[in-house]
Length: 408
Image (cartoon, rainbow, N blue to C red):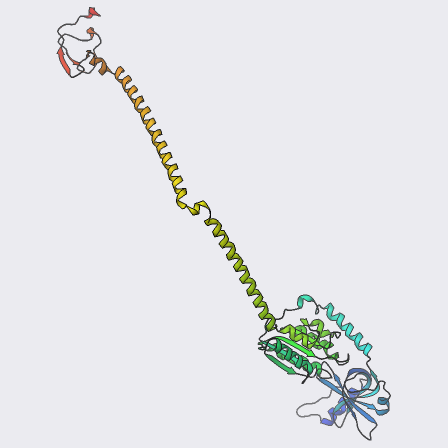
């Protein structure tokens, strides 16, 4: 039953410790896996004390084991080894601490570790953490390079020296951490997140020299692999030698075979870039010179043409042609005017021949009554009627004295 307490009726510490011990006893024996972080053999005692640590968490448990049982484990257990312990949780009433009383210890063999890593690799690959489309390109010239490495390690020296030899102005932000052992995973993950939060860091290098498979196990830990996958900054993995392929290599944006290779990948080589610029400059100069030579040859060819040798020659030809056309037009217009003048003269002659004025000019006259009507018969007038007689030049007014119709 739950312990009934209140501010007025609190439970003593001994009572709480006793109840915790009762609850812990109910757990029974369990199998626990972890890494031996500390191993203590106290002289004169038959008990070996181990600190069992979870590599992916800042958590550890105290394990007690009879010396005889511990000494029978093959191969011998050392600090840093991964073990599987069959133990019963025990609560020490007087100290208020939890420990595991082991009755069997088994070392996790290399084959088992590799099999677990392979299973984890397949799971992460299924999730797409190793996909090529997730890989990000490295910046051409990073402002600051973040470096995670062991303390005063050869890997640190290789990366720094080779990178500065290639590009003397490169800046580094180095975080030294444990790269093997129980605390390696947590320290590397913390350093990775610290550099990932730094706005000036453009690329992060995780570097470690070669070692045994057991030494490189932290770099196949799921926690570290997922932390690298979640990083916003491009990550370069330079773990071990060419033959070493921890899972961090597969999830990183760029895998370098060695720390020296990582230095070649994160910064360009100043001498190579200067030589590339020189070659490009020479190539550009050659292209421009060729273009100028070609244009110069084109201009020379154009100048050798007659139209450029004597520009007025064409104008003279055109002027002669225009003058010929103008003379031809003048002749055509003159002929047309002459033909028109002849036609007008002929028309005028015909008009004159048909005109009443021509008849009058031959001595004829036109007799008109007072209302302008032309008199054609003598019967149309009366005696004493005044008539107008039109002559070729001028007109007369006459009076009819007599009319002779019979003369018709």
